[in-house]
Image 1 (cartoon, one colour):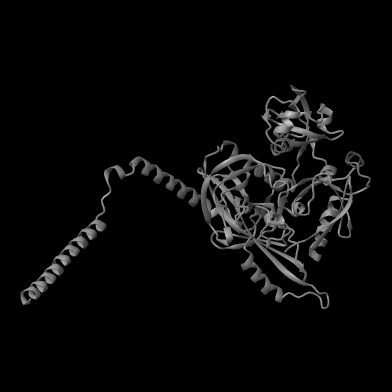
Image 2 (cartoon, one colour):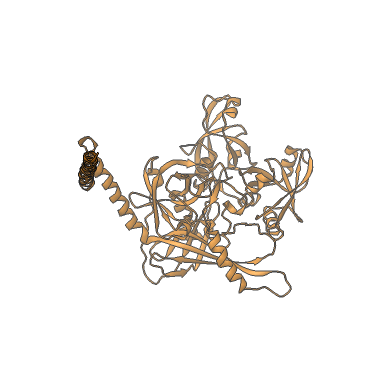
Length: 518
C-alpha cells in the first residue's frame, strides 16, 4: 500500500511535468506562428492586382487633393414668424424631407441636421421676441449645404434649394474663413444657383467637365459637408444617366450614382477621376432617411448652361416647343400599335405653339428632336429647352405606325406658360391653370382653379388622395385663381398647422384635410 502511494505521487508529479512541457511547446509554436505567419503560395494576391488597386487609391488621393480646396460649406439664415402651432415645413431647411412635406423616400439633402440645429434655434428664439400680445415671435431658421468655386474671383455654384428663401447666405472656405454672399442668383427649374463672395484674393477653382463623356460604370467622387462634416469625400460609380425621378414631378434628367451622399451634400460637386465636375449632388432615393446607395446629381452640362445665363443676364431663357409629353408605357405602346417601345407620346399640343405650327398632333410619338434620340419625358424637355430660339430643327415622330419628319422652330418660353404651369415642389404636385377648354374636357362646370396634372409618390398631395384631373378650387380661405394663389394658400396653412383643400371632380366637390408639419 505504501509502495502504491509513493508510486502514485511519482506518477502525478511526472504527469504534471510532461503536461507543462507540452503546454510550453504548444505556446512557443503558437507564438512563433503568430509572430511569423506564413501565407501559402496559392493565397498570395497577384502583384498586378495589388498594383492596380494602389494606382486607383493614388488616383482618388490626387482628385481629393485637387478638389477639396475649392469645395465650400453653404450656411443659410432665414428669419421667419414663429407660431405656437405646428409648422408646415415649406422649404424649411429644418425639415429633413423633400421640399418640406411628408415622408417621401426621396429626401432633400439640405440641412437634415435636425436635433443640433433645433437646439441652436431654440436658444436663438429665446433672444428674439415679437411684438407684445401678438402671440408670435421671430425665429431663426438655419440650414447647411455645400458648394464649389467656379471662378477665382469668388463665384460659387450650388443648388437652388440650398439657398431658397434665405435672408443671408454665408460661404465657408476650406480654411475656415467665412464670407457673406453679396449676390445670389437661382434657377428653380434646374435647381442651380450661383453666389458671389468677395474674399479679397484669388481662390482655387474646380474645372467643369463634360457629363456627355462619362459612361455608366465610371468612377466618381462626391465631395461636400454631410451632416456638417466639412471636406468629406466618398467614392462610387455612375449607376445610370438621363434618369428621371419617378418619385417627384421633376422636369429634368439626372446622373445617378452610388457614391455615398447624405444630408448636407446638396450643392457639392460630383467629380470624375480627371478632377473635373460632372454634376451637382442634389437628391437621394431612400427608405431609411439616409444613404441607401442611390443618389442623383444635376448634370454639369445643364448647370453650366444655366449658370452662364444667370451670371450674364440674371435669368435663364429657355426654348419652347409647345407639347405636353408623356412617357410611353407598354400598354400605351400596344394601343398605339408601335413596333417598339421608344420615344414619348404627345398628350397635348398648345394652340399656336411651334409644335402646332409644325403639324404635331396628339398621340404622335416623338422619337427624335434636333438629331437626338428621345427616350423619356425629361429627356425631351432637356433637349427642347436648350434649342436655339428662332432656329428650325428636325422633329421625327411616329404617326399611325409610320415614321415621318417635321420641322419645328423653337420660340422663347412664354411667360404666360410659365405662369400657368408649375411644379409645386413643397406640395408634391404638378399643376396647370384651369382654362375653359380644360374645364370642358374634364366635364367640370367651374370658372377658376388649377388642375392637378401629376402627383409625387409619398408627398402631401398623395397623402390627401389627389389624382391627375382633379381641380383645386380653394386652400383654406384662399380662392385659387392663379399659381401664386396656391403658394399663398400653402403659406397660410403653415400658420394654422392644418391643410384644408376644396377640390372638384366630375363626380362633385369635396373637402380634404391633413395636419402638416407633424
